[in-house]
Amino acid sequence: MSANYPDYRYDSYPDYRDQGAVSTMSESEERTWTVLAHLSAPIAAVLSAGSLSLLGPLIIYFLVRKRSPLARNAAAGAFNFNVSFWVLYVVAWVLIFTVIAIPVAVAIWLVIFVVSAITHIVGAIRGARGEYFTYPFQIKILR
Image (tube, rainbow, N blue to C red; front, side, top):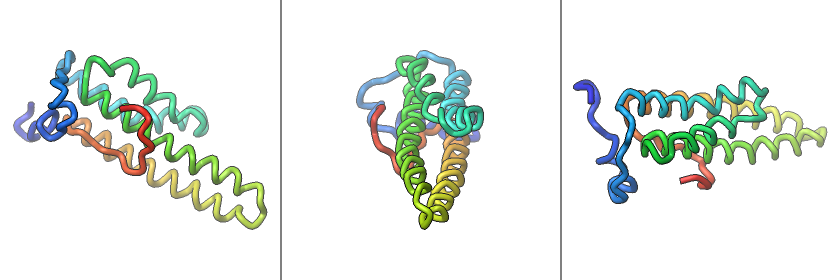
């Protein structure tokens, strides 16, 4: 662990410490997968015009879930967070079909975009430091 960053990896996240989870990856590989897990949702959303934001974190989750508790937590959190925002996204699409709710739907999409972008960037920065990041507004599906 770098002298500039304290080791938050296992001591500050009791779920993994209690389970005795150990990473089988090198520290730099673990951090790379963690950052990729956080950024995979916005990358997939941009490449698919918003329709596949769940796919990136889900793929990474299945690739690293048994090899790195840190990367697994990042991928599961990103997936769960995007499920929550997908619910809001669908609500906005339903509202768009009513003429009165068009401004509301556009406002919801704007909030989804801004909050999602900020949250994924913060998660990626924390992941690059080797820290756990807990997403807000999660519907916990993956753990």
